[in-house]
Amino acid sequence: MNLGVNVPNFGPGTDPGVLREWARVVEGLGFDLLMMSDHVVVTPDVAEQYPEPFYEPFTTLSWLAGLTTRVRLGTTVLVLPYRHPLLVARMAANLNQLSGGRLVLGVGVGWARQEFAALGVPFAERGRLTDEYLAALRDAWNAGTGPAAPLWIGGNSEAGIRRAAEFGDAWHPLRNTMPWLRAAMAEHPRLTAAPRIALRLTAEPVEDAERLAGVGSLEQILDDLAQLRALGADTVVLDPFHGDLEEIRRPHAAWRALTAVATHWRNA
Image: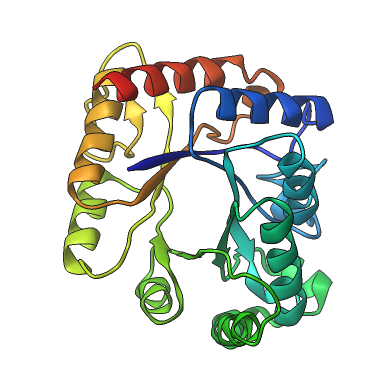
């Protein structure tokens, strides 16, 4: 099972130097995948969770491709209705070529109503548009726009699972509990699963029925990973951001947690 890291590409304290250091840490620790999120317009609803500066993922991942040699690079998740699908097909294919085939394109429908309005994209139509754009993206790649990157479909809903089955190379559920992940993965055994889970390392075990996968003592986190591997997960992406912007200003705690997980997971 591969392990990835969701790197914050937004918020106070984020700059090219910090992003470069994140890439150095993720690749240096032996993680398989570095991913980042997507917003185009930082409207008030976006800024409440993901404030400026927000580094656009295609641009940033292209730059990081030149600073790294091995780690795969991806989006978790690109909001597909925000860009014309032929533009996405071209950018993704080019980035995949330029990085030596290291791109993973994770996509989703989006949630920020004000951002949709700012871009002139109908919020109520985002599901239908995502289906249409996924079909167009596949058609463009099949027609020779460029080498297709693995396509992960994000979302925890039945619609997201249906899209993953119809269009995706993997289903990419986001931040949930282990009981939920076990049930969902057991219900859809034919889907390749690549979940993104939290990463919050605590000194003591977390005794909470609603504990998110990836939250707790090192033993709990390693057990979550072992369970996901046993369930057949292809990749698990660790997300160290929990909404506290000060965590972005001081990433060393996240780097220590990643170091602990990487070290013990390799030796497990």
